[in-house]
Image (cartoon, rainbow, N blue to C red; front, side):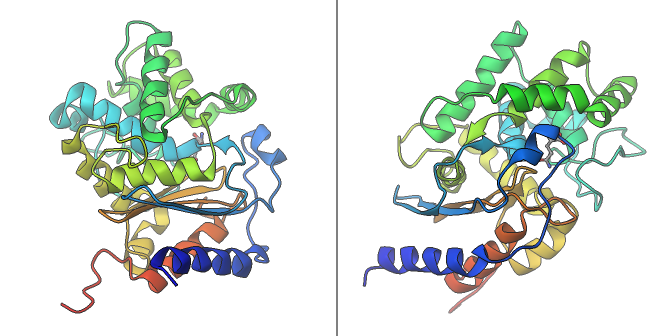
Length: 312
Ligand code: GLN
């Protein structure tokens, strides 16, 4: 049996094992998301050599949601550089929910780019002469990571735009402290649009593999992000990507990851692979229940903890 056969078999075993797990709730605070089938489930791995392993509903489309925050942070860093972006959004974990309305008391910055407040501040930094230019730059960025054109789910975008009062309130608070600039409705729209980008599980794994491959998409060989910023994205994913579960995640699973409320998770094992998982039911922290279990199992079975020191 080749290594590839073994990996493929492992994915099938894990898919079968966790398919029957019936815990968690599908997100319903964005009304459109509540319509999803909770049984959808897929696991994909893409190696930095460009090999693809998929099991389950790997081509089912869903909205990327908070996973987009990693990638828009990269674009903001490319647009403004590290020093300036740090004046607008910090890199400290919050220990709070993903949508908590807290800013750092002293600096007035949102804590980090992986929680909603920080992501709205990050997205507000994306350059472009018009709202359409800014959106196109964002979509082109996703195209580079994924390797094909991406589209927005307009129903999800409008659903969140109409009901996203909490995010709107945070944007106003940050505007008050000068952390985001006018027009804030334009930046909020861009944030809701980036959350509504449609991807499938295999796309997630390719995006993650691009980060594992120092910013070069391992399938198309196209560079998606300036190499010098890859470490920034991975650092905030590692410390903040799983919200108030980030510490336990770093301890037990041990690779940078990011989750989204539609049930996606990406995991990045530098120089080895990108992992994508999709399963909509979430735990109380907003992370996919099956996704967390699968990552724990993958980390153990494949020795993926970045601080594991097997044989050293
Ligand atoms: N669009 C969602 C929001 O802003 C994203 C949250 C998430 O995926 N955790 O609430």
